[in-house]
Image 1 (cartoon, rainbow, N blue to C red):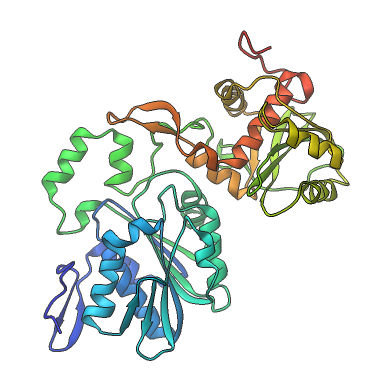
Image 2 (image 1 turned 90 degrees about the horizontal axis):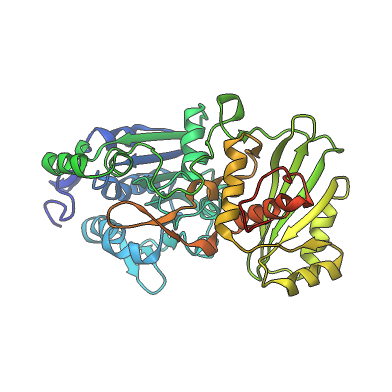
Length: 430
């Protein structure tokens, strides 16, 4: 047995056959937390990944035999850091079992305990186990989406298992909205521990100060201080992620009057068909995104029947969907019973401006129950160049199905077909 850990000697060692950990103050706060969902939001190289195996091992000791999860944002990121840290402790030092690379499973010698590794970019890899605890590495990356976090919670639900999330901050999506904001509001299930890179005694102070002097303030705050800021390139930067009573654009879900007019946007897709539903308060001239869906594996008839079923008691005036090239999909929906309309223009930038103008004029609010739409609003961004400046290219544009549905309903309505006809379009788009 080695006398000390190879990977992070400042965190742990083995003396006289005993494993001892020496956490810095950020790691110690996570270690002492008794909350169900503990998230370390910290600067780069702050000691987040190296801490995870120790937390997971303690959970296994406390909860006993069974399945446990190790989840990374993508499988290519498993090999450089998360897996070596895990194997260094579980296999090389504690000699608890064997690593089966083809299955991405670590099996204990007792034959009763497994750690199953999954990827957030493949949520189906998280659906195969009933887990007692989960360790999530780099949960804040763009690839780690809301549906993956929800899949983890489902896997933990039977045992009311705990989760440790550890990440540098990258965006303002679900991690802020469903974890950080819940913690700030006092949700007893959540704990958030934030600390700077230099809280790790192994991180060079000179490097920290170099980053402070050379990086844009938002990037330094998020990447080195573990504090949320508004990243460059965020397309819907005018959407304020706070509740309406706090001057933001979120609304707590409430019962909508049945007579309020409704308008629906649809983004077609064989795998991902998304809908966004808007309600118009005619007295205040305010609009609410109150319902969302993202479904696959259904026929057009099944999508239409589902949409018509949930809207039976609602005053739905218009349906809008698809790009100009998707006329066949619209024809299929019409044949199935929904009189869906296509766009008159196909200029994405012009429509983005229309949606942004709704937020800037406080005419559009999003129900807090629309978690997927809120996540996309916080992550939809342009590619940033080496100088930290936004380019015209939209990052992973094909992944934002709910925002596309929102664009379609706003685009259709802005041309006089619905509640946004008062919006002035630029010359050439009338």
